[in-house]
Length: 338
Image 1 (cartoon, helix red, strand yellow):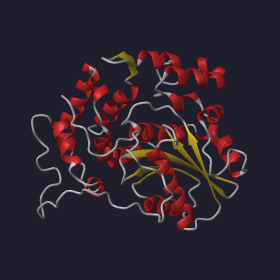
Image 2: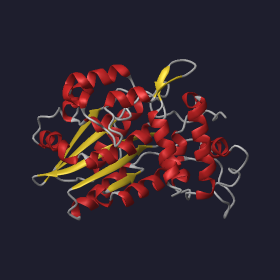
Image 3: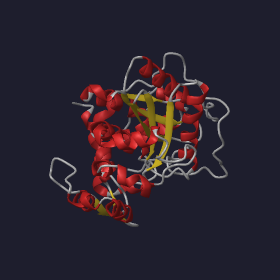
């Protein structure tokens, strides 16, 4: 099975000739090239159930603009076949050549709902536009919510997810924008810029916004899965992240307009947030900043970060790469059937 390439740029790809200008307004424009409207009353997934469910669904979703994907009801009937296709890709190595970001975009509302059912106090919000982000944050602050996570998404130049961690420190709101790749790439930089602009547009008070680069993602379409996994770990490890947020509100973490690079972020971050890290050199760099983390277990199996990393390395046609996040995707999708 081989998914057809998406016409949209993928999460860590830079559109040719694209820059990352500061947006003029809080809302992202609708992408060009939207498909012709379907007849009234037609199912948004009609035609997506065939002999190759994963490929046909992805191809069908690619023909829809982002807004219509967001409003497409989650169809559980096809989920079993999608999971089977994902597991087949993971087993035969074809995951290395496929893109899954459009499927993650489609599945994300259901995945976020499930995460909140498992961890009711996590306060995870899915914000598909800068307006959604700012209004969700405003509502939580007004309701006295002291800690939350906001899964945010870029829309018009491709698909890219990141996660924002919110903690209230001494009546000040600390927001940390966690980028799983690098903010030197166009889509991540654009997404971060739009979140900052939304905060300014809605004049949210006492906000301290910082951008940090984790640089743990090397694959091109796993930003959604990285961000979802990070949201849970940010909640579970929230006490260990208090120093990061305190330094942010005190103005000593980084310049507000300059992302904190990975090597300066590493000393703040517990090892569990790096479970799906891709890249042996990046793992080495983390241990240089956190030597004690080499012996720390990061899962219920009692594995260290290095042991887990080596266990998930597989040899593909072109290179040795980590399949960890791809396996996690199949697990997350499968859990929706339970």
